[in-house]
Image (cartoon, rainbow, N blue to C red; front, side, top):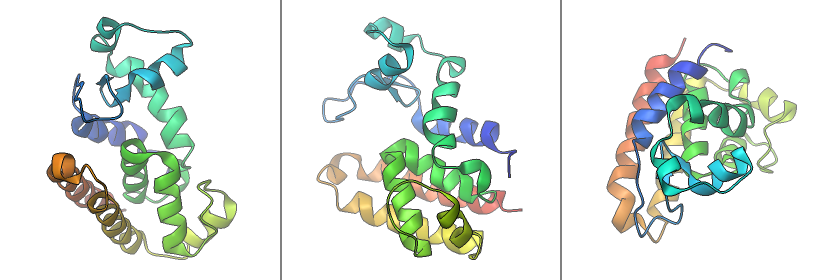
Length: 170
C-alpha cells in the first residue's frame, strides 16, 4: 500500500495541467494544481505570478505528499482507492474527500481519516468503495453553481479517476 504515491502524482498532474488563472475559478492563479495561496503558505512568503508560472513537479510534489496524500492516509488505503481519495482531495479539499469516504463506510464524517475509519474501510472491497466515491463525487460536482462552467472537465476527470483507480487494484 505504501508504493503508489509517485504513480498517483503522475496521474494527478495530468489532470491538473499547467498554469491557469480562470476568472471564475476561486483558486485564482494556479500551476500544476497548486494555487498561489497554497504555494505561499508552503514557502512562507508572497510569490509573484512569474514564480507561479515557473513551478516544477519537484516544487509541488512535497506539497501534494504532505498536504493531501499523507493527510488522507493514502498509504493505508488499497491500491486504486488511494488514487480516488487523493485526486478528490486535491480537487475539492481533503475534508470533502475524507468525509465522503467516511460517510460511505459508516464512520463519523469528521474529515480526519484515522484508525476507526481505516478499520471500516478495510471491511469493504476497494472496488466497491472506488465506485461509491465516483458517484458521490459526481453528485457533489453537479450540485455546484459553477457546474455549467467547469462540469464537463470535472466529470471527465472523475471518470478518468474511476477508470485509473479500478486498473490499479491489486
